[in-house]
Amino acid sequence: MSIIKHEIPILEFDTEKTAVLNPTHEKLHLKLPEKCVFAFLGDYIETYAKKTNACQVSHFVSNTKRFPIYITEYQGEEIVLCQAPVGAAPSAQILDWLIGYGVRKIISAGTCGALEAIPESTFLVPSKALRDEGTSYHYAPPSRYMETNEKATRAIEKTISEHGMKYREVITWSTDGFYRETKEKVAYRKSEGCAVVEMECAALSACAAFRGADFGMILYTADSLADVDRYDERNWGGDAYEYALTLCLDSVVKLL
Image: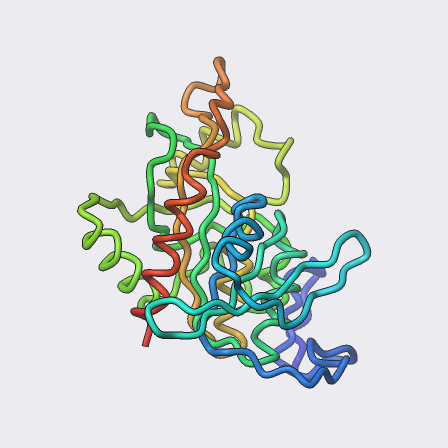
């Protein structure tokens, strides 16, 4: 039996890789390049794709939106570009689909909330993610943390250094409960060493590892929860989109 049974259903991990409905169930005639930027950058992926005449080769269909899949050329390599939807479950669903059609080396970027006094639009590299979401438990056995991919992390850190920037490795808190970040929970996560909070890192790391792909993430600070009595949404990190995509592209070409 491949299922590890448990009283709590979310902890019942199944090691079986073939499901009733697999990511490639549509059997598309689609072979994607290995390298991919799958990022949470608002509409900037679309803007960049149009600006660089990237070729749309497919799209992922959900009940709410069709997500275009582009291929662009960057530093002589073909790179897949796809906007990532917010949330562990929808983003992991698309990542699993991309991996099914050939993607193997993925770099992502997205905003995070600062739990410490970190300035807005500061770039950070998560070393591990606290698994306070549900999706990662379908891709990895129960544990408190999901480690990020070391090879991808090194590529990101090398890129950031080459851009003349300092970087900091952090522990991130991945949560499904955007409106359930209570004062007590924030204090608890900070006591565990979490410097930032977001929604997807644990799930995407688990999904990629389960499928044998390399995944790395760049986080940049948006709102601040450092002072829970004076929440500050700031500008939601929107000023960093363009530079974040450049860091993703420069990192993914280094991922061998």
